[in-house]
Length: 139
Image (cartoon, rainbow, N blue to C red; front, top):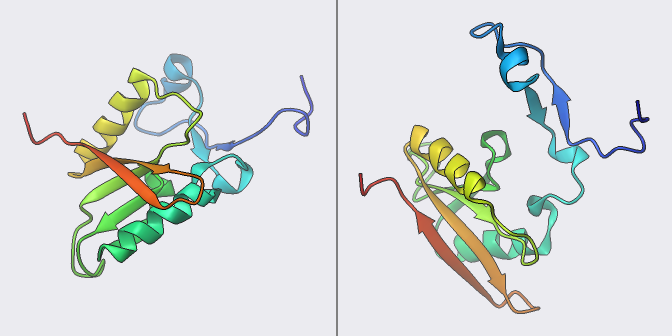
């Protein structure tokens, strides 16, 4: 076994879920993502700050969505009165997105009745932000 200080840890083990006691054998032990342990996470970046500032300037309310597996959740009105409309993923310029990751994001968003906004900051200064929407409405 490697020491914990040598291996980067970004999740904490939760144990077996009561609804499926065989889960550990089928999928491995469930883990909870801990953003404090992940120094490379997108929400800690300048890109995330630029995306949050851009969406706020467009009149949206932007709240962290790390517990849902996304960077932000966007509300079209006051979060106390409105249901969130979009989950936002901040794309890092040098990282690829796997098809499996796209399917995972889509399934999570569809189960919460939201669409996904993939966002990327263009230029060094973060002057412009580009968005792509993934929605399940075309079913």
